[in-house]
Length: 262
Length: 262
Picture 1 (cartoon, each protein chain N blue to C red):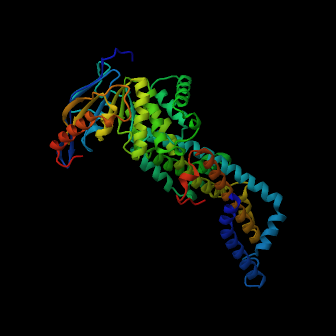
Picture 2: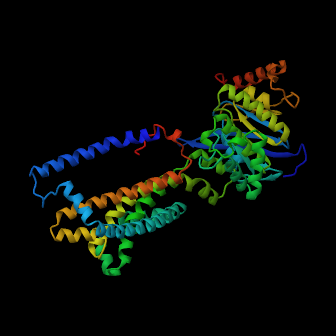
Picture 3: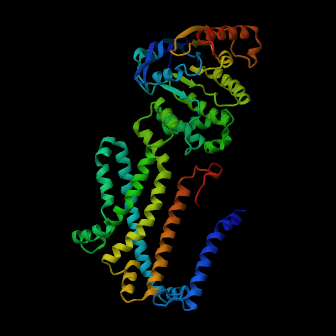
């Protein structure tokens, strides 16, 4: 997993995917290409139903593209599983495992020895202030806490790329803002390569280094935007006038692709 | 608080049973039924006390046979469910045979097993295993395929092996189904054990009932029926208690209003 800063961790080239719907081929992804460099936070921003999750499944190796390639850590890995870590929209914690076990068992799946996985889970739960609930079952946790555990589980997996699929979409607005600040802080200390999916423009601008704006289906990359705000990023970066300009730019972009978007 | 709630659950069925017994007793005392046709509850109770030593020995013999059958049925049921789940083609091939095996009437199967395996314990255990394994296998097989789709998706995305999916997701998720099957099996087991004893045995409550019936000792027959019902209740309660212990992650908070029977 040792890679130089700036080296490309994930490269997706010309991905095209069609589904058959009512007997007719239905284009979902139309030649999508993107890159995530080592230690970079990249966001895929697009309207709901624009095939972002399909792209994730292709990157995870769960689905095969009709055309195009996925390279992870500099190696072609189209259709290959077990190379990414993943945080889904629903926390997806296992109800029969304690919080600690949920994390350590995922690490074991990624090949971490059991004792090491448990030590790592305990260490990090302590670090994010969740030692108290380490022995609890997920049911006892609030939605926000479950998502923290889910994020930690993804963060600790020894994999080159973290894929975060709208992780905060199911949370209420206040919890969501709090979670964004929390994630920002944790990520800026760790600097993992992240591919993040959202349909919230503010979320994308607050968190990312770069944003790929996707069109409404079939998804194409409309524009690649480098987010100019400094790191560590302030939680109130939305007060910056450039933030409003970029937001306007993205809204225009999405509006042109689809007059009903956003 | 808990004691009060338990009492609220107990008193309606308890008073209904008491009312039935009172009407029954009154009818017998008023001479509305001959004692050799319908003995009074007090007479049955008297018989239970009078024959206590003998009845306890017979009940324990039946309990042992039923427990052996449930144990073997559980082992076979779980094994069959897992094998069929892991091999869908095999499952499709043997499902009709499996269903047919459950339609062979036990009144035909019992004597056949006696002819093939003699009058010892073997044919009885085979009969009980055949009766007990099916509800467990069938119910668990359903459970193995019913685990939460988002947990399945998570495991696929992080590249979990087939073994990990079985051990960390499918088996724990199927446990509630396993217990639903087990609760049916334990009830069947007592009746099947009784039937096996009826066919050929020198002990057991089924044997006791058979002998007393031949002697037109109707009070003893009723006493045996009471014992059999009690035995069914006992085994069912044991299975339910075991379920509560094993499925520890299901919190009362989550079950509130879920329409539980017990």
